[in-house]
Amino acid sequence: MPPRIRVRQGDLTTFEGDAIVNAANDRLILGAGVAGAIRQAGGPTIQAECDRHGPIRMGEAMVTGAGKLPVRHVIHAAIMGDEPTDLTTIARATAAVLRLAAELGVARLAMPILGSGVGRIPLLDAAGAMIETIHASADAESIEVIVLFGYRNEDADLLEALV
Image (cartoon, rainbow, N blue to C red; front, side, top):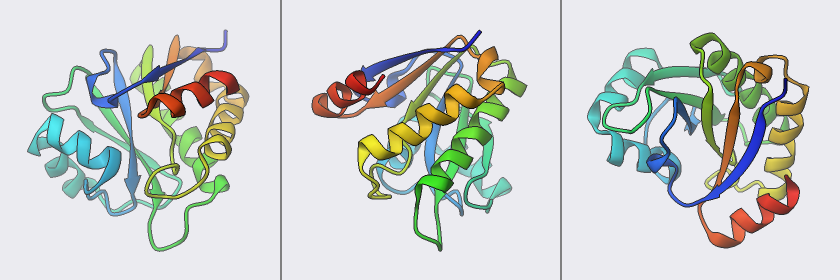
């Protein structure tokens, strides 16, 4: 059964479920945007784990603990690095996240719109690539709910119309 896709407006780090996704760089440095919010809310243990596992290739994903966040895991999807962010990388990273989530037994997953912030991909284009990948993924079938987060009200409204 395919997952239910929901939309929520606000801060991804407040999500209560099994895992959240970080829109990461390939060096796994938790700097700005979603990554910075995860570092700030989750504490230093997440960056320490990233330091042990990074770097990874663009389009790949890896998992860490969640520190002080109200989830068990943070799945880091590398969509930025030495190469420009593009829709192919976003789709590959989304597929990698879904594989890891399935392996971890994640039932409730929250994702930002990868590449739409620091990566500068238009929100609807990035979200469309992610949703298409979710619908095509056999791994997604084991996930009960995927919540797509729009930080601003207008982002959530656009996502709601797309979903």
